[in-house]
Amino acid sequence: MIPRFNLSDELTPVVRLLIGSVIGLLVILMAACSSVLDAPALPVIERPTPSVSLSAPAPTPYPWSDASAVMSGLCFESVDDAVDHSYLIRTPEALANFFDLADHSDLCRHPVRRADFDFSGGNILAGVWSRAVGCTAHHDVMSVQRDDVAKTYTILLLLVVDGGCDYELVRPFWISLSGLADYDVRLVVVR
Image (cartoon, rainbow, N blue to C red; front, side, top):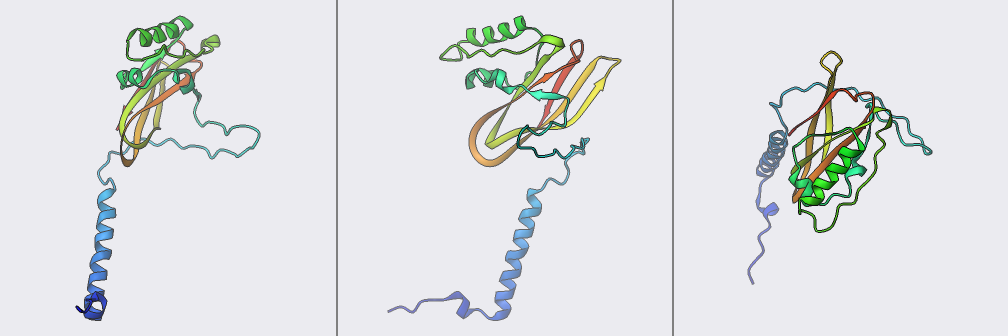
């Protein structure tokens, strides 16, 4: 019978301490290497802490509402084809034309499911799709700039990708805005 080798029995306390220190140092170095040290500083928007209520959704810290549901009837292939192009839709006719373009692209096997949107009172739709590879992805709002003289409204978004999965993702950022009917609304996505 061959005797079993047990590493802990053969090592002196000094060698065990040295191995433990090296492993600890490697863990610290791996954590430091995974952080972004030279990322450019972006403006930060202070987000108010929403109050929790069981009867109503928490208020949004931004002057818009999520409108992603309006575009939820489009197939993956059509939104993948539309990645990185910012859209601004101001009228029911423009929305119908948008859905017509998706239908006539022949990218979807079935007709797209069309949703309605209330354009009354100057409400507009603005949106973008972003592509990523990972487990999940979402957009974080980095800054909002409104220029009433130039009539521009610019939203800077950061695409945040989490996990090492090999999934092809296309993430929407579609919002409903009011009071900006005559503004050039720009959605800028950085990665």
